[in-house]
Image 1 (cartoon, rainbow, N blue to C red):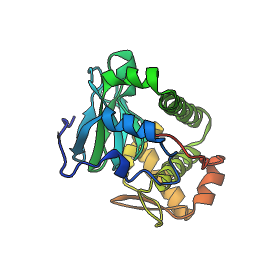
Image 2 (image 1 turned 30 degrees about the vertical axis):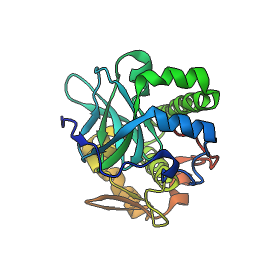
Image 3 (image 1 turned 135 degrees about the vertical axis):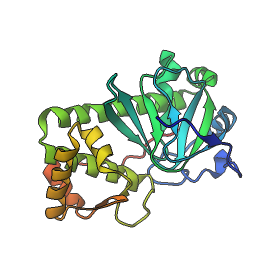
Image 4 (image 1 turned 180 degrees about the vertical axis):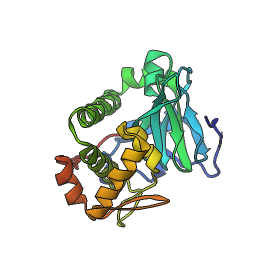
Length: 252
């Protein structure tokens, strides 16, 4: 397992100048909320691809908001088998579980170079006491994570392998587009076949065959660097999934 490799980046972004502000994906802060978040933030970290940001079983003194880049949450079995739980993108919060439960029940690894906003865990209680709007936002983020896990459980239990893959790629591609990771270009997902297999709960051989079926249907393109979505509507139809709503979502 890679160890965390991080350092304070140059030119820390001030909260009022955060590039996530103004994006239609995220709700706007009030002036009071922005002032609190500016004081809540303690710095930033630049994280290298492959670094472990959070490790399962460890106590973590910080919360992180993804400012740029990709990561994934996962758990390991004693025999080394890995189950990927979800993917983190700009605006997502990492470390909340450890803040509320004492220690992390999963790990987080950087899928690309990343920039993270760092918040002190202890000030989370001030947020709940004095800023009800932000407290609702944190609760919303936790509820949304539960919703995502519900859909993933449905995939594992009731969707076929090709339907699972179609749902996952459509889900990640939609979130990447909303988070501004690909601009206006076709959704590029930096995912290996092993990552896809570990998310879907399939063998690498089965995953390879499933990817070829999606490529043959001209729904995706696959190259060494990852996946390109060619037909989002086709993926949604195959997955029997309605897609992600466009209601502005909160972030901290």
